Image (cartoon, rainbow, N blue to C red):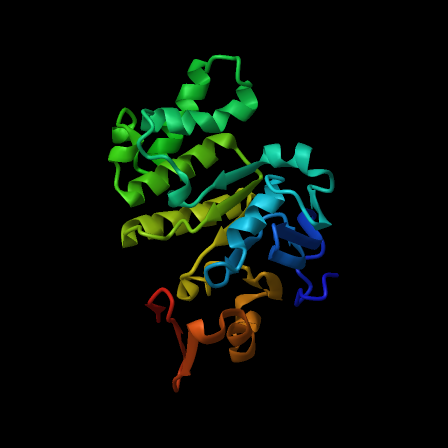
Length: 269
């Protein structure tokens, strides 16, 4: 068992993501240092930590998009090259060119390319899957609109729909709640719950700590290295959060609960 992991972790379930001593270095900067963890099928995992903690680097390392300076990643018990076909990735909004002349439906169709191959044309069944996915995120009426003309919340829904049509076994969502309205946030949580019921594993990088309890099975506290990994009620304590965030987080106890304030992003509750 990973020494950072608490509890039995549902040991009867299969491991779909396994990191063993993973390090990533950009020139002379260590973005990740010796990260080890395992994620089991159907789990919802929140990845939290301050800016620069390595959350996006972690996701790209899982996908094999970055060279590792040390360690190993295994997906579904095998190598990354084969396993990443079964992973859907929703990047941060800042990583997307919103001016690209492509419609909402065309963005979602990109999620089918892994099944189609780049030289095959989409079939009517593929387009039906696209429109069904857009309907699930309440974006069907905007299928023909250019992606950059949507609000940030609508754009996030479109990328979730792209992940839906991919029929992935694992989803990596990088800061999906940033800049979205309350309705979109609720829709995203409902979709995450739906994915779990379908047996899909979901990892979400987030700054909003107060949405973690009740919505995720495990939390990875990351600040270049894995500070702690386990159920939210075990991980969320003053020592772990102080080590993860340093001066960026204040933990204010009250008579009935804890008030968490992420001073870098203004989230509290």
